[in-house]
Amino acid sequence: MPVSDSRLTPQQLRGREVRRKALAAVLIYSRKAAGLTQAQLAERAGLARSTIISLEQGKAAISSDALWEIAKAVERPLSEIIAAVEADDAAAATLQPDS
Image 1: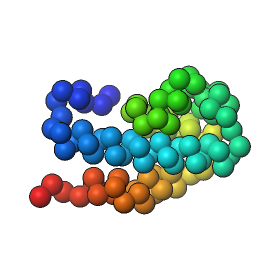
Image 2: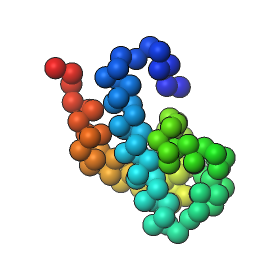
Image 3: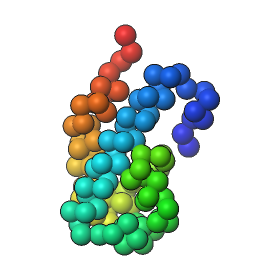
């Protein structure tokens, strides 16, 4: 479970937001490339459609189990999804140690 926003620094909050937005873009692309609607992806992944919507809006965290199910549903290796998120320059920058 993610740490409460109130316990994070502004920099950590910004990093979380950037990473969620990058993941959202990859999930949207992957879903559309698989020819799925949000409802179809939700059904295949065993998630609520509202969860898919929240993820695609960059508003929600996702468990590793759910991310595996989404990868399976869009017929894409999980490593490919993660690599695509990390390819986002802003998201990759959040992985650098704090100076």
